[in-house]
Amino acid sequence: MKDILNEITWLTSQASTEPTATDLPGVVIIKGEVPEHQLAAIYEPMIGFIIEGSKTVSIGDQVIYLKPPSYFVIPTEIPATGRVHQGPNGLPYLSVGLYLNQNSILDLLKDLPNDFQEGKVSNEFSACEATIDFLEAWLRMLRLLKTPKHIPALAPVYEREILYRVLLGPQGWRLTQFCRTNDKGSGIHQSIRWIRKNYSESMEIKRMAAKSHMGITTFHRQFKQITGLSPIQFQKQLRLLEARKLLVFSGYSVSHAAFKVGYESASQFNREYSKFFGASPARDTSSLRQMESQRLVD
Image: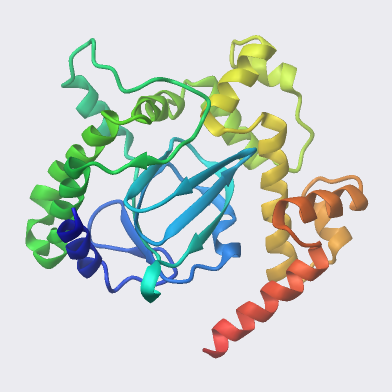
């Protein structure tokens, strides 16, 4: 296992603290001291594989602790926060990600037996220990970076193997969940899309559940199983993430940003912002602006 990880580390050595796109479809790499504000974002559906260092991802009340080599599955667009820690002996944090492709997963599922089991369904997000088979599939995928002419023919093959290894793992059921959720006819999919587009507007759960052809209790349960958040929490965290952008990059005042994203009370906004980001809006904005200024100078 150590030799595999060493070679993967070598193959991904050119990455930076920004998600680094590769010639491999859907594969990104990130390395180094990733700032926390960059990790407070809308996470896209993906498999995240931690190679070196460690990471914590907070989704609602759940915290996923990831130590290498391990991976996690995000089945839909989810607001979350994170923190990375560098590896021992000065080695930088390093991870790769594979964005989920619905067609790839559906094609794989068609070739599996009807009684195939992808693991126990639960409401919990969790870290999954990387198996040798999982690591070897990733190594074959990343070796294509050195032979790009083979990418069109072989990358889909290795993507399929990575997906299969994840399906066999404890969070494999989230891949089938991703396919169901991202079906345009899915009530939860429609609700997530509506909230993302209309996060500043008031939200009627009863009407949303009715449009999804569910009772309120069932709607809440399925929404939280998929996102880790209640619909209200989902909306609130979207509002806070958007407000942070307005404060840092658009020069909004605290009260103006609060009202812009849908808050009716500036004091409530201050409380929820401080709880979510760990600092008041004014202090957080000042700190992030300083960091951005330093990054531009460097």
